[in-house]
Length: 111
Length: 148
Image (tube, rainbow over all chains, first blue to last red):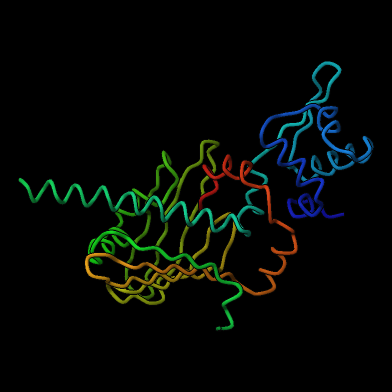
């Protein structure tokens, strides 16, 4: 089976898991607790996310802690609606910079 | 509607600045370095051959040491109204076309930006991935280092 970011996000439960883990690292149990899906099903999703390189699963004492690796989501991030956000942000930055330039120019004219 | 319409991202703005200033800020390397990257991220303008057929290349070094490269080749330049360029954002995506249109409106400037994705199939594939809702917070956190 293919193991990449696109495979990882192809499933709605996995997308939700990614979103949960983007906020904070959670133990496998804590992740399972957030879903009505069976625990083995969640484990399987976590395993796939791990194999796709989206999350790390670290043993911490008795618990297993899931951590997101945000850089792994970059390829997916680029293609979607968020593409828009990215350009909007860049154009916002441009607009702010324009304002800076304008006020600088004004100061020069005053002098 | 053109053939490219459904694989094109369009953004329209009105800048409260005269067109000459907007053009300068958008096209001069010393200015580009100031706004191209996300806040706090240093942008190096490595190449800036601002003429048709000329190449441009900007790089940003991420905190983890990896570099993001944006580069392309100018296809059309009509000062101060129009720029069309090819663009590759490495390592994310290649073969994008960017179109920037500037129109004077008294002391303001209307700005129309098109980002044309490589193929329709590509777009469909993206849509099929089902990225619609609820990605806000995850992506906010990512936004800092994903800007091409």
